[in-house]
Image 1 (tube, rainbow, N blue to C red):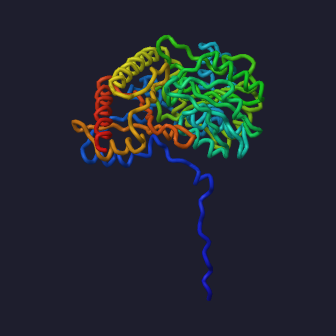
Image 2 (cartoon, rainbow, N blue to C red; image 1 turned 90 degrees about the horizontal axis):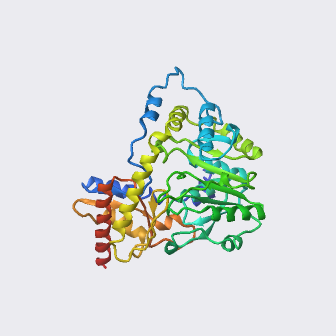
Image 3 (cartoon, helix red, strand yellow; image 1 turned 180 degrees about the vertical axis):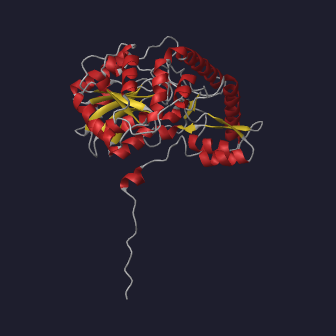
Length: 405
């Protein structure tokens, strides 16, 4: 009896194209450092240390239903109403039908991408950008086309001409994040009106990641894509409770759009995954109902941390940065040759007074090969004391890393 020749099992092109997270890929090195007894200051991930509001936790603890049943695919009606009221307080007039609750902001972005484009279609995004956009686009079969910004200009939004010259017959949308992850840049209303006009002119969708909408400093003001008139048919806003409520593990987000057809399309995606998590939505309802209790205090705390990071970075010879106007990230250019090698070395070979830092290498926030190699993203999500210690350890690490050559 002849043996049949087995065909090798192959992964999909989508699987092969999917990048590892630059934020999380160094975790095994961090685990090993921790086992050696080294304390790690985590500056690599946007996980706030501020306590999740008690109102949210109490609502979850007091969930009284006997059966944890499926909920509506578009989200609990009470949460959609609370999001509507929250947006109205920011002069954004929408109906509850314009709100689709998603399993975190990640699903909101994936749903939007899948609704507007086909495999091979393109989305223009200012670069650097939140690294998972690459992964989301790969999952949707789309391509991110980067529009470069510059650290010495504070990663300001590129000019209209820079966007226009990258538009092709496969371009379906412009997507941006403001306040920005990973740079902390805050785009002005004038900037966003330029993008809105371009979207109208070229018949493109305009996607706005507004997860950090409240995180603005020094009197800065966030302009929502939903504030801009004339793009009601093409403006899609993606949001999440993760940062606003210091509830990253809850995984509750939303898409908001006034275009009925696109909302019905995304609802079909929502029906395919059945429903977003019920108990966490109950917590989110309580969060929105009590948001004024704690949000101002939270923003004041993050502005203070922003100032601490900038003060300590200014002591590092050769560091280039501008003070961020929003979010809780900064992406400095550091006097190092390769941020990925440096980030690994800090975990494998360096400690100062028993501690080291974990940072996110800058190249993972770029689609353009070779960019970001001397940049790192720092998340100022530690208390002020730990933040000062972490930046001092980082400075000592840079000195030692450069001396080793």
